[in-house]
Length: 264
Image 1 (cartoon, rainbow, N blue to C red):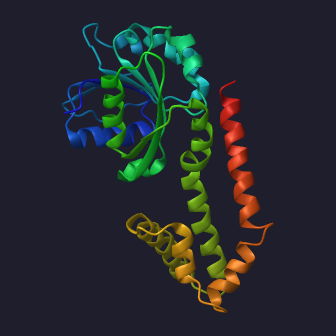
Image 2: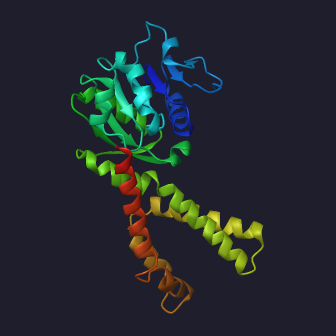
Image 3: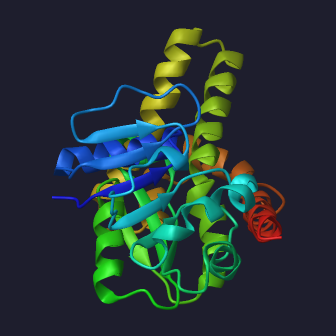
């Protein structure tokens, strides 16, 4: 059973997390949604602002799922919970030190970066526990995050920025691959409906094979590549030094830099 949670922010990621918690059993909890609230369940009360939260509500964790640019105005509204509940932030770029400045130095904060496959419980999240986080609080955050996929932990908060670039932004890179494969298939004369099926199923099926295989991705790639065959011809283009190797490296570096900029 998941203990009482205060979910601040009901976007796609907040909603995905809530769905995962409900599947595991959720004690009576509260969500804040300033827009039109979704339909609550019997275990969830939804309010439009922090002032409406009942005075006797005592969450075990406050999950900060708001946009990072709204942190300065939003986080101080929840300072009253900082001495008792662990603060679990999934805001990109916002550092633990920066959040403690808004929540108070007594705040026990875990900074985490999930990704959108959380919506189908296939996400991956990396967390970093800040000063004052107890083992029990870290375990609670692990339980909350494992409800939407795999969880890993790092001690160096600086790693969260490249993690954001790789896994946080990574689903967009995979979707772009499917988009480009579909467009290229159409260019080669394949009907659009079939092009979409081929691109989507190839990407999703390859991901499933990668997840199930004990072999690394380089070995799986070589397994598909027959000497002097069609795959070898394609990879000769994609793996040219100025092609994917350079583009992916630059993309990850650019996303990492932006994550650090968001910390301000």
